[in-house]
Each structure stands twice: as structure tokens, then as C-alpha cells.
Length: 325
Picture 1 (cartoon, rainbow, N blue to C red):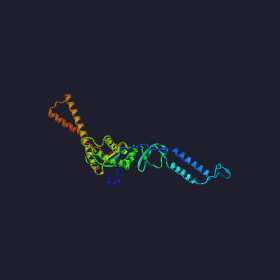
Picture 2 (spheres, rainbow, N blue to C red):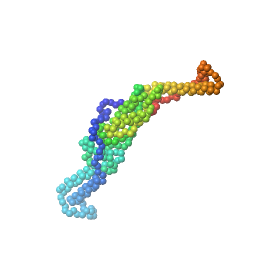
Picture 3 (cartoon, helix red, strand yellow):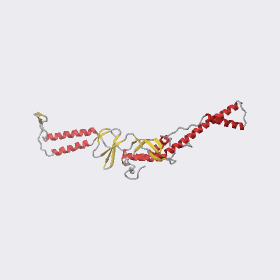
Picture 4 (cartoon, helix red, strand yellow):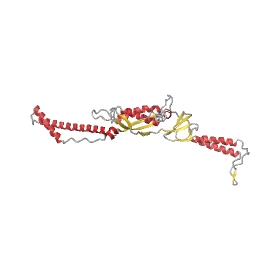
């Protein structure tokens, strides 16, 4: 179970009513590439006008003579400005991938989510954070719980989920994946405590009804995860077993129940055969029996048929401690 310390429990924050995902500002990547090319061309032109670039190399004329050999005053300032423009354009280049979005923030405030793919330009003044929004599977480790009869059990759950609202997943909880795992433990404990794991006598509802248990887990977890922007598709129990300390005792109880069921089945078969035999004899007029004789005949036939079936075989052993849901 989880600890109460602040460093192990994911922190959930109050969710504002207006908090929700909205598109962030992004430009196509080619606009930044054009800006870089234009800045490079401008820097070359400034250096050429300042007669800094050589117009001939090894006697070959590469550039025309500049119209006037201006001084270097202001040249390096223009070059620095163009270099800053290039750095600003290059710093905003990023790539959008399918299933991965960019969550944008500035000074800790939410500034939108970019779901576009391909080469993009996002202002480098914004903090970018990648977030996976694909359909994901997570299989829990065995979770300790107690059923309605007070028997400790271990349950393993398989979740299918994804992040639907990136704003809530980022700001409504400190870590949405850890929060999801903590909520799974709480939901499993709740759902398992409603029914016994097995009912060896009455045959009532038990945790072996995996469809009912899965529906209970899915509906409860979906409601718990909705405020943090996580969409849950299914929570399916894939393994349900007794804890080690009670596994042997529960195995003996189930074997005894199976043996009793087997004995009852054999006795029912014998009584049915005796009833058919007595009815056949009387219907055909082969015997005329009073109540005392009928009882004696039934007793003798029951002993004979039961003996003919041989000793009641032991019910097959079943490893309850390792039985999967």
C-alpha cells in the first residue's frame, strides 16, 4: 500500500473549471527555414557592402565590386542582429510526431497544446514539454486486497488508457502516471471487497465473475481519472489468486467442496436409477409391492447400484492459490 509521505504520493491540485486543452500557436517549419536563409543572405549583403568579403579568389572574379566601400561602423551590429534572428528562428524549430504533442507553458502558465505533425516552429520563449497521447497498456503488479469474507487476495489488472486532455494531465496532478497507479490500487481494493473470491456452498456471486469485476473497475476508475484528463477504456483483471498465507487452507476448502459435489452427483445418479427400476417393475406388473416391501427393495437396489459404481473417486485437485480470474 502507499505511504503517507509527500515524496511518494502524487500530489493532486484543485482543478479550475476553465482549465482545459486548447490549441497552441505554431508555424510551419519552412517559415523558420526561410527566415534563416533571408538572414544569411542579409548578412552576406552587409559584409559585401562593407568590403569585408573578397570579390576575387585566385584571380577569379566571384563578386562584383561593392558600389562604395563603406566603413565598418554599424556592420558588426547588423551582423549580431541577424545572428540573433537566426538563433531565434533555429531555436524554435521542432518536429511533431504522431501520438506525441507539445504542451506549451510560459512562466508556469499554460499556453496551449500543439498536436500538429511534421516540421514546426514554436516560439523559443515558450517552454515545450512532450506528452504521449497514444493508446497505452499498463499491467499492474499484484495488488494486495481483502474480499468480503476477509480473505487476503492478490489481484493483477490490465489497463488500456490514454491522455485526452493534456492541460489537465499537466496541471491537475503532479504526475498523472503515478496518480493513475495509485488510483488503480484504491479501485481494486474497493471492488474486491464487495464479493467473496469463491463461494463453495451457496453458489452466489463471486469475484470469479470477471466481466462484473471488470465493469466495476472500469466505471470507478474512469470517474476517478476524468478530472486529470485521462481517458480509461478498460480495466480488466487478468489474475486473481489467494495470498500465500491462506492459499493452502483455501485449496483444502475447495477440494472438500468439490468432493462433496461429486458425492452428491453420484448419489443422485443412483437414486434416479433405483426410481426408474422400481417404476419399470411395477408398471409391467412383474411385482406387487406394499409400502414395506417397496422400501426394502429401494434399500437393496440403492446399496447394489452404489456398490456397483465403486468407491467415490476423489475430486480432481485444483490449485486455487494459482487460479487466474
